[in-house]
Length: 228
Ligand code: FES
Image 1 (tube, helix red, strand yellow):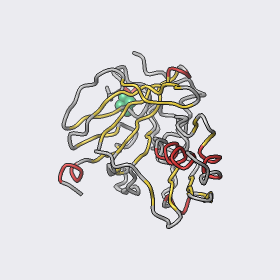
Image 2 (image 1 turned 120 degrees about the vertical axis):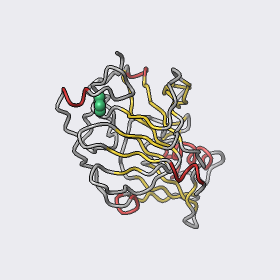
Image 3 (image 1 turned 135 degrees about the vertical axis):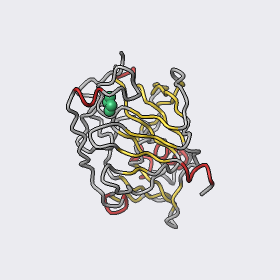
Image 4 (image 1 turned 30 degrees about the horizontal axis):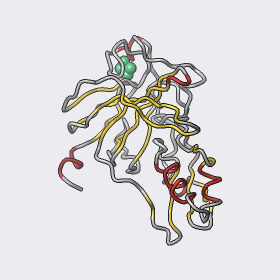
């Protein structure tokens, strides 16, 4: 791991924010429909800093940053997500050219859809022309890291990301999404536990996930919107 990557970290504060250290670039990204698939469009510019605190309770008046509102709203940020390893939690889907592990941790970003079907259909037909590439794309573009694609030798196919954080917006659903964390940034629980290192994951920022600290798409039914 290079020096820049080794300095990056996210620390969860008990019933409070995520403290991000190590100069991690921060930007807003808009989930945007493109035919039957989706792409990211850049959103607002956000201030950059060596250390910053991202709201976890959903009540900040200065989103995506913490403004102390978690104290006033008595935020209960208890971490309830499984700490089992991804491979132990995930279900295996086998296809002719590719296999897929799926841990069902959905942030409802919908990048698993394409013009030729969803990732599970594409895996099943991964020996057909053009389906292999599309199966890989729809798996690796899932921000939640729910989907991990492998070739038939078991080699994981995963993009290389520089550490960065994207604040997701989902105007198609008229909601604000979670915090997309890219590039193997370590995540430390309030009790000091280090979660399994992952290349992609989405953190909850509406405060209502049942799998805290991770997003479980609850922001959609609760209509979370981070407008001030
Ligand atoms: S976590 Fe501090 S305002 Fe939301």
